[in-house]
Length: 246
Image (cartoon, rainbow, N blue to C red; front, side):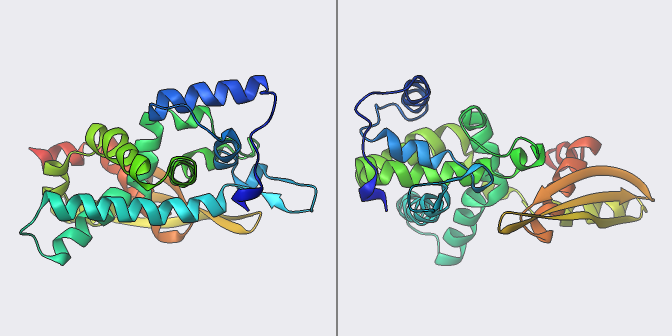
């Protein structure tokens, strides 16, 4: 499908803003702005084209996920020449998991260029990482693998990934919260508050309760991710992450 996308002869004001955003984000001028426009359209805001197909960033997200995984795997393979495949797989997973990518995307400012159904603002918290993957896919198609690899390393990993902290950290916030509750003799449980079906996928909302008192609320495209998001927010609220760091 991407081969059918054409560079518009006359750029609209929104195209010019998008080009400026990509230049700031990636450090280069897009050759095919249509790819990046598509990369920023979430399925909740997709509109049917002339063939009746609803175009969204899902295909680019699929491609970007694969390219990102390959680049990170290559980077870690060379960065840690004496580590086994189990270590490399675990660290790669921590870099490219949904929570990590959402956080990186938010810090990069991707929230300002993503288009989604604003009637459901909760989507804003769970789609940024997907959009980042779609942008990686767009860069790969637009500029090739070598340029895309430089983008991932120079614009994602180097500024936003602290490998030393990542190696010694435990990213399973649900487990950390449960361990904390056991030390403090507190009762913690997770509840799924809602499951919404949004144009082909489900969005879960989870709540943490400690001694039956509500704490963090999290969102995700499945139960596990929603609970992890809720656990992370609760850990932040209670200062558990700082305790672990100390």
